[in-house]
Length: 244
Ligand code: APR
Image 1 (cartoon, rainbow, N blue to C red):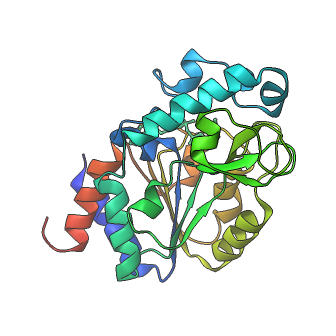
Image 2: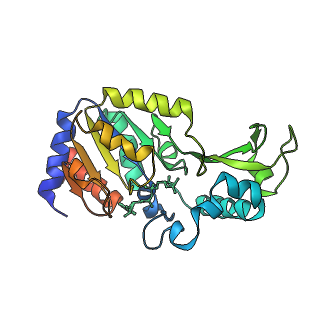
């Protein structure tokens, strides 16, 4: 990994008064969770529309339920890694202002980050498919019906074909208006509308990409640190703390 480039990222962060972070599934692979579009990602083995769409939920609840049951089980055996912990510490130090995430694993919050916008919802928040009433994880696990209306239960994540949670999106966009640096970590930027964020941010300040893979608009990024998020964040953290 090029130390000069990491030093340049540290300098950009110190010059910025308001850095936001945007993360995707690549932020949690070092925790042992699969991402979606890498060679061994979830969508290499399964069809997203078959598994994670409203249509799948309505027409094939058994398979839909099993898919999320498996993801909840994987979540139970995993947790935040050093990269999540470093981002939480950077927020406490004021080096970043908050995190917009596509991830539904809750690891940023679990690591102690306070300002987190979960733009694709949260796996562990269970709701009723029909009335939207809150359900419990155990009720979902045991395939119990909604206590309110008897409907089917689902995780509170954004399914393909659904809109993003309005309040989270609105708040995140307002904070993006104020930011003057964007650090994008572990996302292929393949899915709208989140993948439009770098396009709307590009004239507001430098953008840095920390990602193993490529993205559709690499030229938008001042620096692309190609490698594992946890390791790279650790190196930058050491440079910022003067211990590298
Ligand atoms: N460090 C850095 N980058 C990584 C790491 C890692 N340890 N592991 C994987 N990556 C990179 C991959 O190379 C890939 O470019 O992270 C990116 C993950 O991209 P996706 O798997 O497409 O995940 P994401 O961008 O979050 O997907 C967006 O798609 O299916 C929907 O709702 C789902 O929120 C998800 C959305």
